Image (cartoon, rainbow, N blue to C red; front, side, top):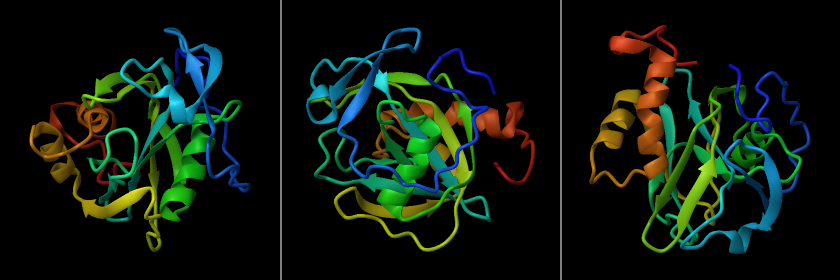
Length: 206
């Protein structure tokens, strides 16, 4: 799938044998065309009016097609305690989003994503929890996962396995506690993974 943004090249294969840094100290600032225009400190870039920057979202499915969802740590600066997709994060300067997704899946959840691919390369959103705003160019990846989830307590409060329909229902329910980016991504992913008119393209979302 081609992207109109220069920082996201889904044709590049990811060899993430080296996990890379476990703490990303800087985020990549981007313009409306997705071009890198600078870097900023991750700890201070988020505020009431956050500049647009590069991020990613990753959705991990097991062999039965269940989605691993996570509850963000209540100690996080942005959207603490909300339920969301499997993993989110920010590429470091010079790091491809796919490599960042692999790095953060390992760091936050102790999982090695397999068959990682970008599904929504141009997704972007802007949302505020009333204190802190997110403003991200956020390509969305899917992958398969297996093995024991080993979540870091400082990153994740809880995890759960949901059916795809359970996730769609939560995205459509205002009081479900699901993150605003996951709510926007859900119908787009449903169409991309399963096709229009509710007819799955295959039994396996990947």
